Amino acid sequence: MPTPSMEDYIELIYNLIESKGYARVSDLAETLMVHPSSVTKMVQKLDKDGYLNYEKYRGFVLTTKGKKVGERLVFRHELLEEFLEIIGVDKENIYKDVEGIEHHLSWNSIDRIGDLVQYFKGDTSRIGELRKNQSEET
Image 1 (cartoon, rainbow, N blue to C red):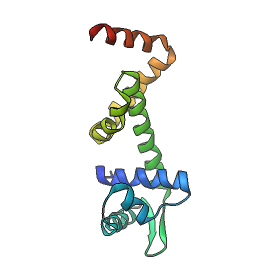
Image 2: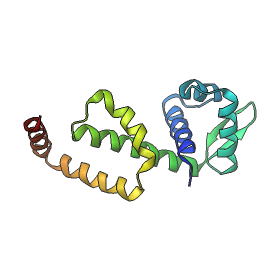
Image 3: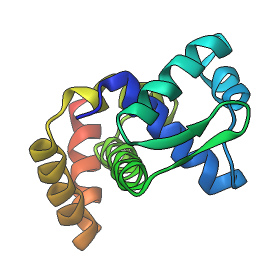
Image 4: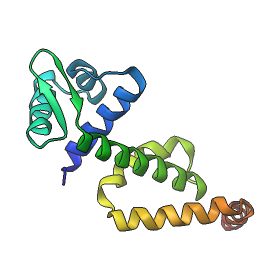
């Protein structure tokens, strides 16, 4: 199991490769606001653990294992954003809140949140009812 820090790197690498076709140490360092040497150390660890293939000065690519984990991490992130939006969390708080909670939930909890999101999306009047109840409380 990757650590929360490893998960952040894998998720970012996955997103960069999906959007740009590649990910570089400099891209990661800039996005994470860390020194490139810190990124290199983590990339080497991810290589050692089989999440990516890294060649010094040549870059890196996700392995099949890394892609699978990356997909799951992106799914978790997007699901939590969707859940927080459904329950009425202010848009300006959603990203920060997801970043704060995503590593602290079990996959069982993520699956149950997914069920709840599907429940609300199955009949959008349920979301309206939830929002109505929220506005009545404030």
